[in-house]
Image (tube, rainbow over all chains, first blue to last red; front, side, top):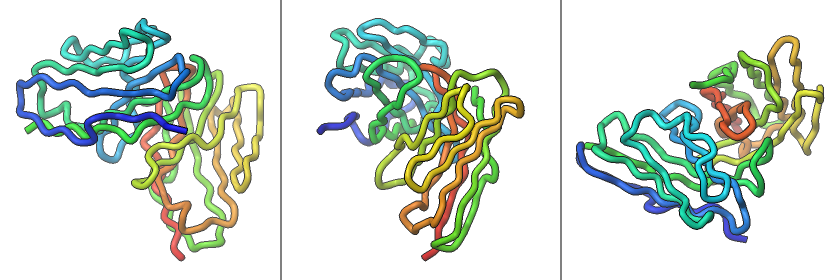
Length: 114
Length: 108
């Protein structure tokens, strides 16, 4: 079956611009997660959705980052006024239910801020 | 912030040998998971061990958990070139915290 998909696979933007990254989770998965991964590091938790609501956004680094999941399926991570330090691979994952279960990861979006 | 810390940072072995990776964490946990990441398949879940379990097996993988020492180990037996990847431990229920990973290279 279809796994988690993310678009675009690569995004290059200029400092100060706004970007949107999209995640399409596995159908029927109620929980959705965003992480970002810098080179040589493990994924860093950003935010988690249960259904349409953000259940835990404690990992968002600052208020330039925002994510939505309006219909409880597709999610969009939005970054305003991008900075060079935002450059990373942004990973999305989903799981059937929230809790200590296996998370299925997408291939990621590589964001480069020039 | 990262919770787990893997050791060693890098490991290089010959095909057929066993590989052992360790993970230490700081706070009490409900469960610990191991994931593998390579360029071809992205991040893939390997195994989940709950805090009341001491050992778990899945194929050629064996995971142990010692909550008194706040540590876990992942053993891959009879390694193959296809096992070449980075291996991460992660703790947490929904807000998973990953370590920096162990980069395993299996030479054919």
